[in-house]
Image (tube, rainbow, N blue to C red; front, side, top):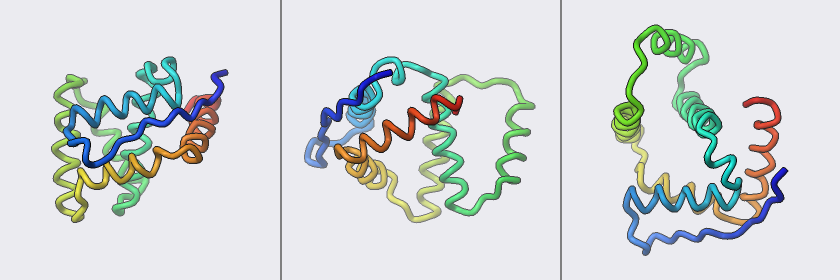
Length: 136
């Protein structure tokens, strides 16, 4: 088991945020918190993404039944291309943010600053370790 090392990866707004900068900073943060094995585990990264997407859906009012209907719909269609699906995720997330009056960029930066503290890194590491041990 990896020993947690809360090496800080500090990102500040004055760094000139771009999507590319954000993505590489998140990669660095992920490797610092979880190590290479967890960061490089595509299944785990996908499960974490799905978890966050479902939490967002729940937060804006979808029910578990709604999620089930969408899941059935998606898994009864042909498999898509990952890059195109990422584009679809970004477009629909931006549209949802517009509808709910959430500034997408500000929400992402704010969340990064929230999780980029030693205490929060330790909590996240422990929580994700628990999920990994239980196949989540």
